[in-house]
Structures are given as C-alpha cells and as structure tokens.
Image 1 (cartoon, rainbow, N blue to C red):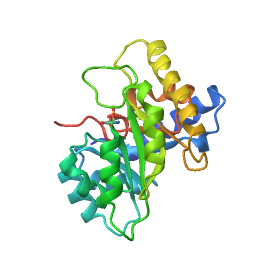
Image 2 (image 1 turned 60 degrees about the vertical axis):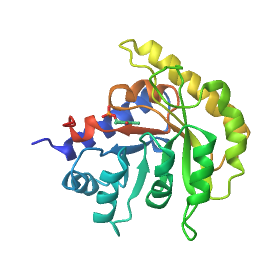
Image 3 (image 1 turned 90 degrees about the horizontal axis):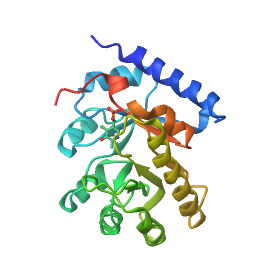
Image 4 (image 1 turned 180 degrees about the vertical axis):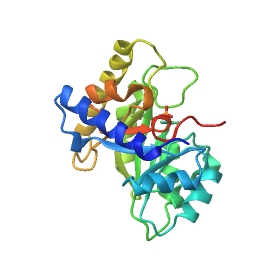
Length: 230
Ligand SMILES: *Cc1c(COP(=O)(O)O)cnc(C)c1O
C-alpha cells in the first residue's frame, strides 16, 4: 500500500526546501496532483491532505472521475493531447487546460466554452526543445499566438507549459526551463500580468530544477500516487 498522504508531505517538503535554496517564496509555487490512471479512492486520499487541483490526460477516464466527485469544489486540469473533436467536452468539463498547442484549438475551446461558466483557464504548451515526438508551439511561434489568444472572449490565458527533453543531465534540463522562463516574461509583457501568472513546468523527476528556474505550478503524478499501471 502506497502512503499517498506521506508522499504529499514529502513532495511539499521538497518544494519548500528547493524554494529556500533558490530564494523563492514557496507560496508562489502550486502543486497539481496528476491523477491519470489512478482510482477515485486515491484522489480522495489526496483530497484529505488538502489537494484541490487534479490533472488528467484521458478524457473518458476524467469524465467519470469528475462526475463522481462533483460538488467537492475541486479544480480539474486537462494536461493531455487534444484532438479537435474533443474540444467541446474538454471546454465543458475542465477548469484549466495546460496543453493548448495551437491557436485553432484555443479558438474552438473559446467558442465551445458553455455560457454561464467562468472563462476557461489555459496555458500554451511550448515544445521548448523542438522535439519531433512532442506537441506544442515552437518557441518562435509563441508570442504571436499569445496576442491572438488574448483577444478570445471565453478564455483566460494564464501562462505557458512545457515538458523538457528527457535528460540525465540536470544542467540541460535547467537550460530548457530557463528558456521557458524568458519566453514567459516576454509573453507576460503582451498580456494582463495579473492573470498571466502561470509557468507550468516540473514533474516528479525535475521538481527542483523547475523551481530553480521559476516554475509557478508543478505537475506531479508518480511521486504522489506511486507508479502508474499502464
Ligand atoms: C503524466 C504527466 C505528468 C506527471 O508526471 P510524473 O512523472 O508522474 O510526475 C505531468 N505532466 C504531464 C503533461 C503528464 O502527462
């Protein structure tokens, strides 16, 4: 039995420690628990430890969990790949989408966000290391996309998201995160800085380098819930 509550305590301690080491205020770093492929019972344990933000990658799986936990005042974040025929469901189920990888997807999400719901919070996914295997905007295309998306009525563009290239070399991971931070600052200049406040980067294996380079939101799955059975 994996002690999810202990894992959360440990992850929070790592965040505090890294924040101190890199002269960050730990209150400016939030934790998203990535619950993909985990049962509702695991989410409930995390909720008991005070987690309110959960990240999901698979729409059908997420829909079941969201419906089961309705009324619990949780925030649901979609972090998976987006096919255009899934945007309507994503726009109605989620509070946040981190994986918007092109302007046309943002346009669909804005058009399809149901009336009566708050604007959908989104982050633009950036393919920071220009990997053929990853989705996301290339760094040179981000600023134009930010300007276009900032005018979409039913979205609130909150920031940028990235998954750097896999590497055993912390320095190269930090370099990718550092380029994300520079891009984030440039994009913020074009936006309302009071809402463009989120740099979504850092997963279980790279929490510390992400904090070192300015992450404001960490997406952590394995180190909270244990290994996923796939
Ligand atoms: C699965 C996933 C995570 C969590 O990864 P862990 O290594 O399990 O912490 C974070 N972000 C995205 C986009 C993911 O798909």
